[in-house]
Length: 251
Image (cartoon, rainbow, N blue to C red; front, side, top):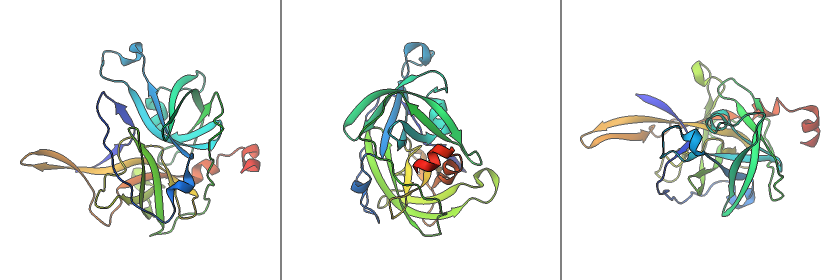
């Protein structure tokens, strides 16, 4: 049975895996400081009996020096609100800052909403990438930059199609891989920006599509077959459509 898996990480005390990125149509170095890991660690009261639960980690990207965009289920799992400031650990490569954040607003809603987080302190090094307003075409090459645990990963792939029915209606369906690794985009990648070959953000990673294969050695989680989508993303157009007049002037 095929299942969709949210890509936010529930942090437990364990070691991170490391992987080597595949080359793509744009040099990831050109996109430096656009994408960050965002982590919220829970205090003792929030752990509610689960002593091994440290917090929630996802990926986000700078819309401005004071705003980060991710997906709704990351912000919700972190317990963020639109009123109370809560501390986030924001990692840009090896640089880590602790900045309080709250939800500024949500955008879209056909498949999953995008969450715009307001930072209490500006990040001067933030790079705001250009947003693509035109739709992707089948076979367009794309590149996602995501954090899996503390490891920044660049993963290339292609756009397959936009979902047309069911709960995936309006979603951008991608096939992403690093060599033979079809799970290169996985837990922790929620909120990761998906760039086209011009370096424009065109979508935001939401979930991965996996299936459980029963083997003589136990259940094994695997990706979809080659030639089919394995990543579900939110078109960034949903964010553009929600811009205020002042934001439209800035962009």
